[in-house]
Length: 290
Image (tube, rainbow, N blue to C red; front, side, top):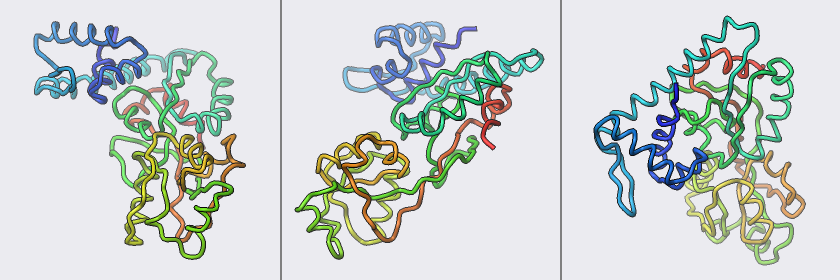
């Protein structure tokens, strides 16, 4: 069976942007457009309303979206369940994580996994950690490594890997910034470089709200590595997981600030759809973490 058209459709549902969806699917925008048009012709309905500026799901598109998600999950479950009778597991698992997570956690996990299951192929995708959980929910990837949010979809399973403090960082030397941070800082005057969204952004927003202060946002960026880079260049104060800083080539150019109260630490681990854990391939990978 060829499930690619359903995967392309779901990716476009999640992004509502042909450029981003085609990039995520590793195909050209024109190829994605043709695939969606063929799907619409087969179904006899229009799935998306689109013009030069926007893309949105039609009523029929929303109904088909529910079917497509379930169909992809059921296909993966039955396909992999049929492998249980084989002498040796073989197939493919799609894993998504940030670059930092790939060399902080995946090396050890995959080293053990490859020795035990040499015929299982790992497709590794790296990118913005804030989109990691959504990629699992949409069926784009089977497993992801991500920070555990305070609440998440009940269809997801989580397995803890590590804990990483969430820290404030500043340039090693910046006379103007040092004067603002000395004593009891006036946080409304501190230029902040923050994530656009995600766990760290929610926690820093809550931190400022508890202090009845509004952050002076200099920049909002995607990816913790970009925050370290901008802070090292002296643009302001950032908030990143300690594990990102420990693995950054720019670590010596920034310093950790002693700020009270501390932010809640990151609980890092694996995410997968509970339903997909029925697959012997996914379960084999999941079982590597004890």
